[in-house]
Image 1 (cartoon, rainbow, N blue to C red):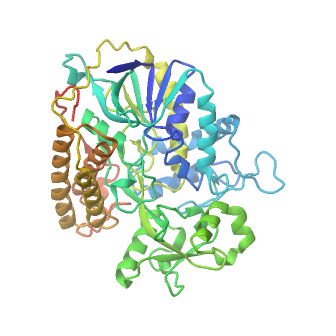
Image 2: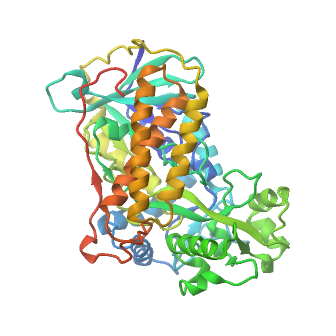
Image 3: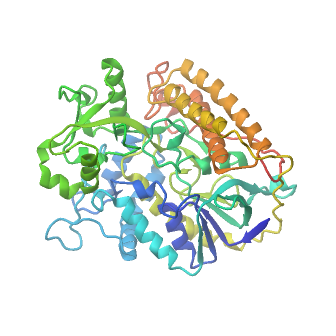
Amino acid sequence: MKTIDTNYLIVGSGIAGLMSAIHLCTRGRVLLVTKKDRADSNTNYAQGGIACVVSSEDSFEEHIKDTMGAGAGLCKEDVVRSIVSAGPERIKHMEGLGIRFEETEGSVVSGYDLGKEGGHSKRRVLHSGDMTGKEIERVLLARVMAEPNVQLIEHCMMIDLVCTSRLGATSENRCIGAYFLNGRSNEIFAVRAPATILATGGGGKVYLYTSNPDIATADGIAAAWRAGARIANMEFIQFHPTCFYHRDAKSFLISEAVRGEGGMIVDADGHRFVDDYDSRGSLAPRDIVARAIDDEMKRSGMPCVYLDIRDKGRDFLLRRFPNIFSTCLSLGVDMAKDLIPVVPAAHYFCGGVQAGIDGKTSLPGLYACGEVACTGLHGANRLASNSLLEALVCSDVMARKMCEDDADKCVVEVGIPEWEIGDAASSDEQVVVEHSWNEVRTCMWDYVGIVRTNKRLERAFRRIHNMVEEVREYYWEYLVTPDILELRNIAQTGELIIMSAQRRRESRGLHCNLDYPDMDVALNGVDTVLERAVSSDVARQG
């Protein structure tokens, strides 16, 4: 088995992974591993933009207040304050790298064309048309590929993190790297590093309907859990209210910026029913809007609801939302003439690997940045467009702290064992994996979705727990493949979501339990933290 030594191992090539590589490559050797093509990430699909205070009509205090309000009593104020106040400097750094944000006509340096999204009291979302994430990914990838100290490996999926406790070491348990599967050659290799950074994003594919691309299978969260790192607040899954509803559209998101520019959510008769649930109507925070849509669809039996932005006119829509406009038109919907059919879909994890804004987790040697991490910024519900801001700021703080701590200078004296195949055989039952994949996602959607009950969670736990055990047996009996690894990760993550939801006996933010309809003020600021004992398994750690 090949083992690669490096100073920094980064898993994931979205904004968190790429920015971490840019910050750290001046310090030492960086190996960045991504499971598919280098540009495949949730970042690449982000339409809205980056929330940041850059206008004289806005303030840090207002951004902090909006973030805390959306987070429903679970945000950590010091974290929110640190990230929000560091935003403008990070935006300048991004522009220095070559990223350009839309400006108003005739503007100079500070005349940004700022968008407004749900939960924001001011216009503060910087954007590059309606394809901000794609532009960020393009520029950052070009910069990373030009760095001689960065090696990027594609089509390789992390199997498991490697920890000293599993190797028989008697000193403090720490992460020393990871095993990977090359998806093209089927070879398994290891990477050994004093600092391993998870930038693997979220896991929308745990659910049947999601805005996320196929890569979003919660790989980092599941691997961190198996390694013994603490996981927090997994019950808070954000369902985006407006995913395009069409049999030929796969996970296409209608950006919240459409509502920010005046789009209204209506039923088939044109009634703005969200106004009946919240005075902010279509621009209420996502948890409120998603629940309103879910309730309306169940009450009326409608398969979807609609977005109406016809009054803005074709010229404005083509200029502000060129990608959304053209995609809708290709599927038979003219935004300038027609109502846009939409439904809620799993979108963003507010929970994840418990970490500070410096990326440190409970497991020495392991860091987490971006959506995979739970820092305390989002609380019980993410404020729109705060996610890219978090990745920008935390990757910078993490790199600075790692350099202060000489994280890359820690000598890894323990060797990583050879990967043992044992009696594992090739599987000729791909149908089993596909059936299990669909079963996990359907169960999570039906029982652990936008609205939950104790009985639904109990049913879900029994089914998903059994599935976790079945997948574990399958994993040991057959040679690993990307499909088996992803199935193992979504099943394990589904179980973590259910366990967390069962522990939170209240309704707060994105977690709505009809058996506990009210928010319990005694739980303000109280995270749901999961922790497990780590086994002493070595290679093929399971």
